[in-house]
Image 1 (cartoon, protein in one colour):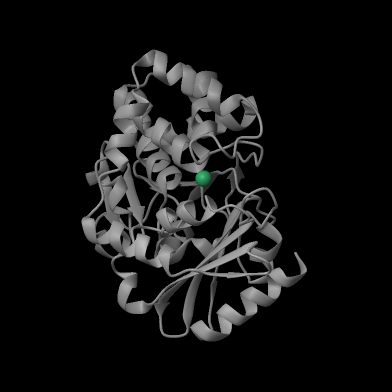
Image 2 (cartoon, rainbow, N blue to C red):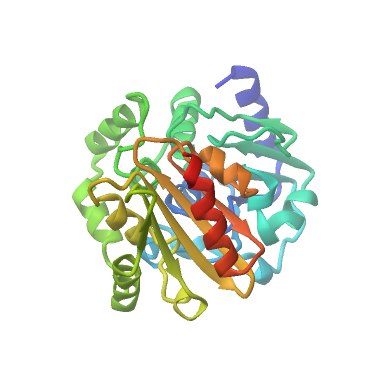
Length: 317
Ligand SMILES: [Mn+2]
């Protein structure tokens, strides 16, 4: 992190009367836990009470993370509605922001801290690095550079963020996330405890997701697995349906996994996963984005059409 940016960051925090902390819509582990960790860090180090705001749904398996109750659904935020400073974390692109966009637009100053590839950042100041395995990694760098104090909620939150965004370290491309996790474990974090905390989903969610995996179809000599969650089952899905994706990824010969989620009529959420081949290009072709091996898009079309288009897109890969 550039010292100049960090100095301005601290200056803005100190001067702000009210601060919002926001991440992408339908927060995953990194988005949710980075928001909560940042809010707690500003409380510990600067005595600031931040407003943590989200849009969409928070997965059930993240219900027990520390400080979860600090998250406010955007439509229910009453006071304040105008912020001196917004810290925007782990959002990717403006398309992923959702209903919190007005808070961001109305803020006097916006600072973003993100590890997504993003050609059009929207903040006044960016502390981005797409080589970081998670946004929580960037927060840990800030803690170290600024010598911030932290506590066990912060370390547990950062650990959950890193575990979820790296797929339990499967997606790391360098040792940084592992070195940070080593520090967190030395501090007292128990990975087993955190895994148990996340493996505590409603029965219906696990059964819906395993049935969805069981009904998947396979194309292109078994290299592509396509699973579908229809609208009536969508409410039982936990977050993005990571269980479906992880089950199908375990099948011999499957290189790509695609999960189609009928969020509403003619609006299909698509999750792409690549085992060893990248899927960021195909997500971009569908108007989405994300990471090299884990990406997604939201497509306005019928379920049947999106299914056809997906099968066709992978014909050439
Ligand atoms: Mn992330």
